[in-house]
Structure formats: structure tokens, C-alpha cells
Image (cartoon, rainbow, N blue to C red; front, side, top):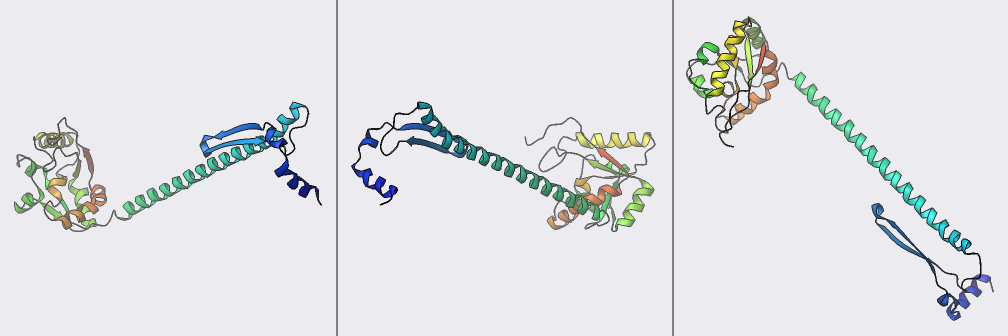
Length: 241
């Protein structure tokens, strides 16, 4: 009979291990959801030995477990860092593709490039919608990118960027309308060729959604055609806020 078999035979009949007070140790690693209790007790009870040996026996597996936990923590940290790097690379590629797409569309117009003469604009009295300006015969439309670039280079077109002050109309108070006229005239006074303007509400269809989206898709091209970029930011309050 082997020593292992003898130990197994003694186990059910031995009360020494039941009488022996086990040594306990608690291990908690919240980050890994580990909450363990280790109890160590010999089958035949504790022998009279130096207490330091007992502590060593407890510390050895405890140290090994802590080492494993630390190793797992390091692995998780490295994996998280790797995922962040992959995400950064992905976003960089997305931005590069977006820029490349914008550049490739600079010479593509899905909807004619429309502009309004500043002299006619000053007679409107307010910012008029695209269809109204068109029906009055005051909207100049250019069909091709090359023709638009030549026109802008010759007469000077101001691209006006602004924020709408209402959901249904960009300028319900009329403050932007006045500011546009003053700003363009100031550009002319300073020697800037600015005879025409591009303004979204006047130059992008408002009723036909398909035409409107086509014009919006051509915004990169429209911006590149214009000779002057004007950012309009007068003091005003959003009427729907």
C-alpha cells in the first residue's frame, strides 16, 4: 500500500485535522472580481514547528497568486493600450479618406453654382429664399466647375458663412441682411473684388430635397470657387430657442 493510500484511509477516521485550527488568509482583487479565502490545515493536525514556517507556507501560494493577478493586470493594460492605438489609426485613416474625398470633389458640381449680384441683393430688403430669387430672374447659375472658376476669378465672388437664427428662416430679425451688405461694401472699399455673393438660403434650393442635397454635396467645390470667404457673426438671438 502506498503512502497516499494510507493517508486516504486515515482521513475519514482522523479527527486531528478537524481539531486543528486552519490558517486562513483572505485575497481580494476588486479589479478582477476576486474574493478568495485560503485555509491551510494538515491531515494529521499541526505539528509543533516554528510558527514562521507556517507563515512561509501561507505566503508562498499567496505570493504566487498575487503575481498572477499583477500579470493579468499588466496584460489587460497592454491590451487596452493596443486597442486605443488601433482606434487612433482607424480614425486617422477615416480623416484621411474624408479629406481625400473632399479634394477629389473640388472639381465636381452636382448642382449648378448659383450666385447673386450684390447690387440686386441690397434691393431685396431681406434675405430671400432660392426659389424667389430664381423666379425674379436675379439668380446667376453656372453649370460647370471650370466656368465657375473662371467667373469667380474675373468678377470676384464672396462665400458667406453664417449660422441660422431660426429653423425656418436664417435671418428673422434682418440683422444678417444688413451686416452682409455692410461687410461686402467694406471689402470693395478695401480694394477686394466682390461683385457677387454666394449665400446658402439664396443659392441652394429650399423646396426640392433632391436638388438641395445635390447642392450640399457640392459645397466643397463652391467654397473653392469663391475668391473671398466671409464669416458673418453679428450679435443676434435664435428665434426658436
